[in-house]
Amino acid sequence: MDWFTAPDYWLSRLVFQRALAAVYLVAFLTAALQFRALLGERGMLPIPRHLTRVRFRHAPSLFHLHYSDGFFAACAWTGCAVSAALLAGADSLLPLWAGILLWLVPWALYLSIVNVGQTWYAFGWESLLLETGFLAAFLGNGEVAPPVVVLFLLRWILFRVEFGAGLIKMRGDACWRRLTCLDYHHETQPMPGPLSWFFHRLPKPLHRVEVAANHVTQLVVPVLLFTPQPIASAAAALMIVTQLWLVLSGNFSWLNWITIVLALSALRLPATAPSVPPAPLWYEVLVLAVGALLLFLSHRPVVNMVSRRQVMNRSFDPLHLVNTYGAFGSVSRVRYEVVVEGTLDDTPHPDSDWREYAFKGKPGDPRRWPRQFAPYHLRLDWLMWFAALSPAYAGEWFGGLVERLLENDRDTLRLLRRSPFPPDTPPRYVRARLFRYRYTTWAELRETGACWERTFVREYLPPTRLAGAVQRS
Image (cartoon, rainbow, N blue to C red; front, side, top):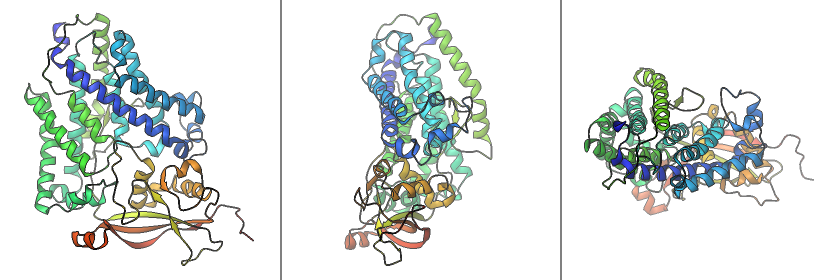
């Protein structure tokens, strides 16, 4: 079938596949380095306990067959190795069928992780990586030109990501309609980056322009993805520029980067296409079958997207093949942070020597400037932002965090930037307090060198010690 392939997109496919492999690598590296404290056998939300409550058909995962921390580590590091091989172009050295299977390996491994990841993996970019990764497996390699059906479905994902995010904003917080959300967002976003302070201090009229441009990019430009070239490439390029602006303004894990990767597949990059034979019949049948399945599964996400009760970041099938997306349907006006402290005193009181735990990404010390971590995902830091919004968001895991801090648990402390206690001297008590944070003004920054100003609000968790702990004599 002459219409089946689009030879002009062979370079776009190559760039897309290598970029996607890089995102996979970051995702698996994040899992390998953080899972023991979060999900391990002694983690805050242990996978073995979770598996007793969830059936395989509801959340398919290799870990239903067997779980141990060693096996999880092997899966995560295998995912890193396969992703690195794909990044280096290993799929191009294999027959077409083997290349497809190689691309399905990281998808299956990451699906296994996400489906047991619980709260730690309840982010839209997890499903977005899985949906994109599954479809990418059928793009083929150098033996065939890129199939039109897969290229179209990649644009369909990108359309739902952008258009869904635009709709949730217009239906959600009124500040999006009033063009005022960015008066607050750069200050109250989950994890600010090194430039977020400067973005917040931009003139308010420029914030209005930013919001208006966002609406155009998310509600108008996505439609142009399905127009002829070069309009479609121009639309994709505009999306890439917008996402790079978001990369500069904060730490959003790999959400912006996977969106950029999707947009790369819509670009028709100038290059001379190599001569390749027609696609084999079995490949055409396979791609058409996958395409028909994904279009069929798109029904529920589309119904959700057009519904007045639209929800964000929802998977409608256990394989995360077709999902719904969205971000920041509401924007916080005030930033709160949970500050965790410990003391060695046997009897805690307000004047005790309370020492603050330092997190890697979330705001703590007002003088410490935010760092750039994305696309790497600091899962505990992100959940601490939700915990500050309401204790209900932390009900499952915050007690486990405190318990492990009281034990000086090595794996948990590795998630932090610094513990105020020596490895062999755990705290006697740990407490948590809620503070209001705001960015300093230009004058305050020059005077104090601090980018944040914080004010105590209330006690979040009273001084707590391990059950059965005895006082020192």
